[in-house]
Length: 247
Image (tube, rainbow, N blue to C red; front, top):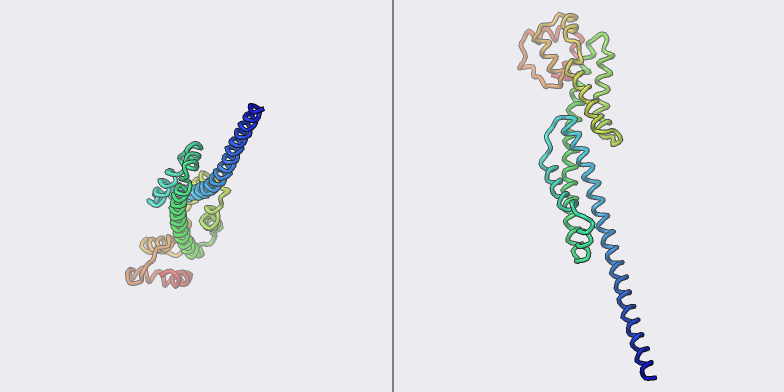
């Protein structure tokens, strides 16, 4: 009888220990799962930011031929430090109670990514504004031509590209690069037929060179102009509206 009682007590103690261990495990698992979920949310936010940074940087460098800003390199470095880890690495961080410290590092990397993204947007906005100005100047010169439909289409395409195309995430960077190369090549070939313009108004080479500068959106001051050039320009009524806005 005594032996059976002792066995029963021991069994109950064992069950109690097993229950306590199971309860602690479930609580720990729930805690770790919550930490893992929170950390994953932060990491996804960082990955999304860096994807946008890389796309904007590809447009800035590959499409428009600019150099990668140092801010982008810094963001890449910070992102690699927190993203280049295995699942075991993340679990170890959580199990050791270091997830909050790690999340703080992720937040720092996200801040760096935001800085890089904002800088690239600013740089692209400046390129956009510069091309708008050039297109506007070219349109003023273009109005002097008798038939400028092809040139008008080119200017419209350039304007649409810098205003809309580069911001459309559905278009691949390779396509944008190829498209812009074609537009830029046509632009460099000349939006205006300068020989035709020169013959039509009997203009000197110096005056044509000035009009080319205006067509590229460059600023010109009257005091820097040769007197004969000014006389030629003012002698053509069609030039007056162009000069009033541009010079």
